[in-house]
Length: 336
Image (cartoon, rainbow, N blue to C red; front, side):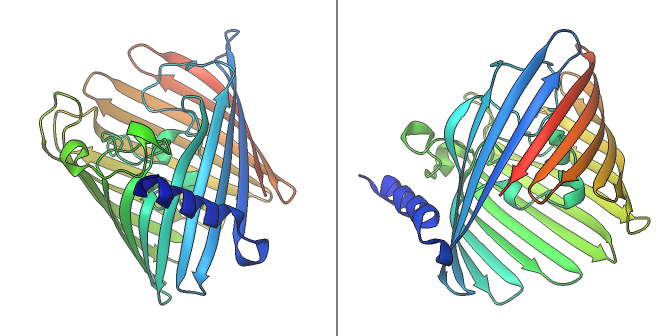
């Protein structure tokens, strides 16, 4: 067994199998029924298991997570460009998502080392997580790059500094993400010469119930087998502005600085309203790609059904050169 396989086995075994009193385990199931309203449907299932193991109390921890994904139709109902479901991917029986160590440097600073992905740290406010579309999970101008974005992960460093008003984050990753334990596609490899490097940073300012974000990312390397090795970057900003304790307005914009990427510009507007045990969300956006442009709108409502379950009916409208469709999505979330 080589060192990569040994590290993987020890970290996953430690975080998943230790006695319950010394660890925390979380289980999440997301089931989705998709329909394009023309005798087309797909049933999708995402299982997520995450474990946390403290090594030194309040100082050192191990984190590990794995996921499995399966759908009845091994394809995509609609050829949208942004992804109306942030859970959808190809069938995967078992894939690694995280295997890293955390060093808590006091109460404000955290350093993570190991396999991780950007979805653990960026665009994770409850308001953005309400929406099922992929662009609210990460803007398509950032997804230009083959980095550690779901369903992929890679070896990296992540630093976070958090105060009452400000949160600053900085990450450095292998330039390409993977989703296998072993072999040529293992997440435990670091190949800056072949894969390049990817960095991302973000500053959040919190005021009362509002949050405002500015961020930037950069990728050095090629985007394909015959691509040019160079630095490419994107910037973004978005606001989650509280009109009241129950109503937030959303505004977002992002721009990519190079012309040899998929997405050049992204802009979105939306709102989220809390209604007792329900949350109602509306988000509409425009994305300009090198080969097309797309308008997409989502109307969603998430109901909390007891302590462990949520039900979320959603409607999407997608318009690009090839698609002019309504899409229905019913999501069920079970968390233990």
